[in-house]
View 1 (cartoon, rainbow, N blue to C red):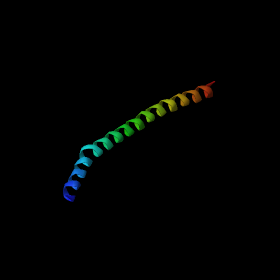
View 2 (view 1 turned 135 degrees about the vertical axis):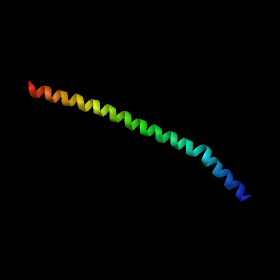
View 3 (view 1 turned 60 degrees about the vertical axis):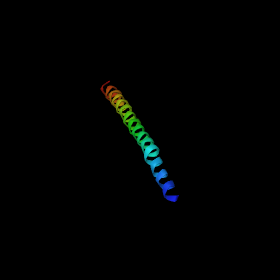
View 4 (view 1 turned 90 degrees about the horizontal axis):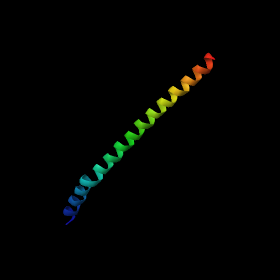
Length: 56
């Protein structure tokens, strides 16, 4: 009986927990990428404003 329960638990782990954790990992990576792109754009704007002030 214990072996059946262990097999069921492993089956549940492989069919539900691992795919869900992979989806969360991919979402996390996408958020990091999106925030990095926003930060790069903000840094470019700051650089342009700083060089604009230096020229004037």
